[in-house]
Length: 281
Image (cartoon, rainbow, N blue to C red; front, side, top):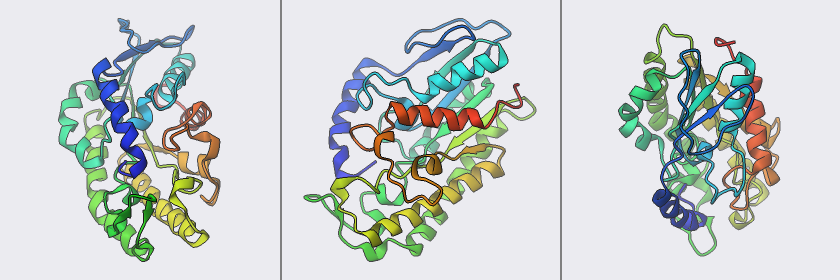
């Protein structure tokens, strides 16, 4: 996420990196999971693997003390199936983009090939407004505003579609292909709107309308690709921003107005569990 407000997050990234990755967690039907604990799973157990950016990573720097939606989903899956669930949260707190994930996708093959459930969360950092030049416009770094809003519109959405749809198709088809013939829960997250309601953006009403349309197009593209390749798309966007996408995310976001708060994590967990647990339960 390349907005000016993310400078502080880069500093936080260095701190998190020094402390290590999220690692393995385990959940059972009788209890929750704890970060950094490796548990040996019995033959009857299940494995959940998560890949993506900092949204599913749930860094304590972004949301101190928050119980992330990945942990909540693992606990719900365990409760529903009656089996222990070991989690490999391989998402990253590094501003990972979709092209960046594709560059290292093969490094996740061993884990993803063995996963009974997979969550892919890579919706935010490649979104057109989060580029160094949003929709081709420069940014006013002093005011964190987009200089040329005339560039934010259908042409920008079309360009994003041409660039990223093929990447999403390769991502989802590859991951699904590694699990061909095996019962697997395949889930993808779309993108909630963290622009409308963000005070430093200084959005006018016409600009807010453009932001909403850009999110509509982006999520339609992302979810269309996901479902085409056997994933169920978790509609976090409308859970956060309402049926028409115009409602600010507000308290669903943490203080940085980018990452989910505890309420936001709880909401994402409900969206994910609301999709059911077939074909595992």
